[in-house]
Length: 194
Image 1: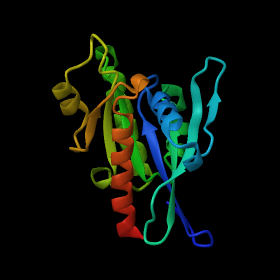
Image 2: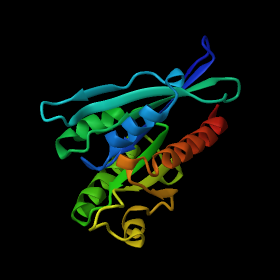
Image 3: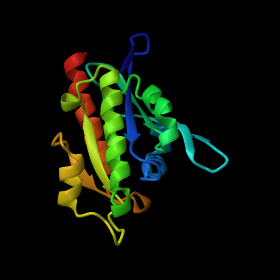
């Protein structure tokens, strides 16, 4: 959270976190394409030669007011590949909320768990109490033939009893539900802090 009293503006940061190719960028791109262009900035993509996200995708849009301040939500994705651990930690600096995007495919359960452990470690390194932090779980790719049953995903990943949604981000299913809930939780938390 960053408050600019000169502009009566509060910048809030929501990060899409999860293993590589779980659908983080797909979520952000779908949301960007379906938000009124007058309420958002352009999206910034930084990619490697292999077309994998290196650092982040960035977008802003505005909603109502928080104690007289105009909020701007900055949405980021983190690179999910193992070699970008340091980048993920840096992107979490100043984070106000997390949408954890899990890949529902059975072969990806280990990656989901490893990345969740990485998230918890990085949040704690940034002085956040994980149990009280706004985290949303999105179980993406529910249309896969080998999708892990929801109760197994819940038991394995959502140890915080956080809000959770099934999704197929490529079709836009569950994208706005997750984002809306993340925004609501962030606004509730920030309203208490401001």
